[in-house]
Length: 287
Length: 287
Image (tube, rainbow over all chains, first blue to last red; front, side):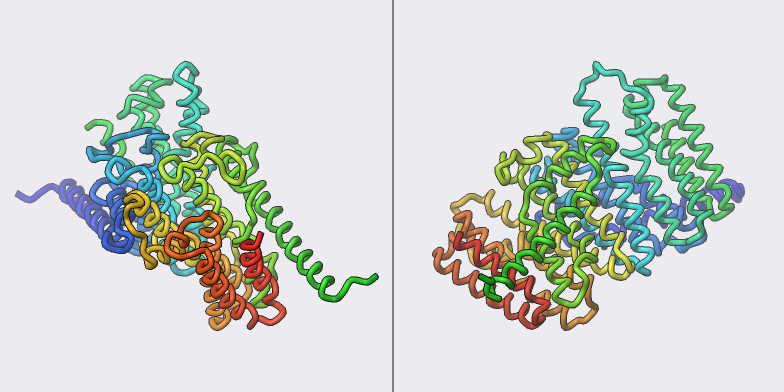
């Protein structure tokens, strides 16, 4: 019996996402220094922090956004790797004893448990440095500079680091202090949301100069990024759930995903993969 | 009585170096986020790590190299700040308990003693990020990309971080293991030398496209950078002095400074400030 056209479509979509995932995994491997390069210890730690695990959500957003605006996704692979290296460095440093003090991540020992604290700190530094090195290779130079501007802003103290700082300072003050919604929103938008938004914008920059398209992608990324953090909070039973019920948090996610999907839909069939990533977030709440 | 022309010249030279220092201090202040910007804690830590202390040797090299190749030194100030931010981040991270575990630097509490380990790690990350953000502002974009390439290579695992890793691993193996000259050379050239060389190259890139001039500056920077580390070893009674006498180390410095000065002299009067920085290193051995 022939499969229904709906099934066929969804199988095609899955295949296309898989092909992006494969491209990303291969490129990440290729863009990391070889483990044997001197000094091997730091390169092993960098590879450990990036390879083998991770959903590659951010690189998938980069490629999908490139496709949505009419670009050629493989051309956005350097940008996709740069974003994933930033994400990986932030996890390595966040896991350190002085910060979250985590012993495992995704079922594996954290980088500092495996390689020691000194190498973990330096591997994070090296991934951060390598990220900008990769963006420096993008052609033309004007695009490289636009990507560097977007990523440095997103990863800096007005973005990811700023969110992390406020999160830590709040935690240090102890659970006695009430978390208010504006602080929570600040942390969520910056610690996680801003880098996901930058992923979308960077992918789009590899495919268009149109201010209108870039604005649409920026709005898509803003909604998707915040939704990602609320989903994470629901999974971890933390963050938003300190201020609202699980049902309210789920409604917030649904509203944000709705926003994101409205933006994605305006790219017509080219926006399908962006829609798919938005749906992926929603679906992850039911698993 | 009128001063001799030699005295006049040397006083002029000093004044010109002072003017570069003033430009650098003002620009560093201007290019750091304001302490009051949200979240203030991280911006205070970043400013603490950069302002108030430091010889600004690397930024002075940037400006002097720009002048030597015929450029306008104030135009190299963004590059000078970027290099100093990288230097400052590396000190903050090196001082951490997991690395050198230093409690003071230049007579002040180290960043993690003053702000705590978590903020020190993040302040280092933020300075590293801010460094590439600054370079992204350089015009034209082709020059920005050339600077980013040079700095990321110098600061990465084939440069500064690589040297630091080998240094740490050697220290961990304990003093029982003999340090050989090739390992020592590897550490010295990468941990310190490579960033000083990059300072010279980046300054030159702000003033010229001439491959011949850039090669000369690269050679100058290589000799100066290694000399800097040997001088540091002599002051600290470490490193090179584990493999040679103080007198031999001093001769090594003199040979390297001689090399550097030969390259600087080929820029005629425009190379005077480069000569001055080479002499400054030699002089610091007699104080």
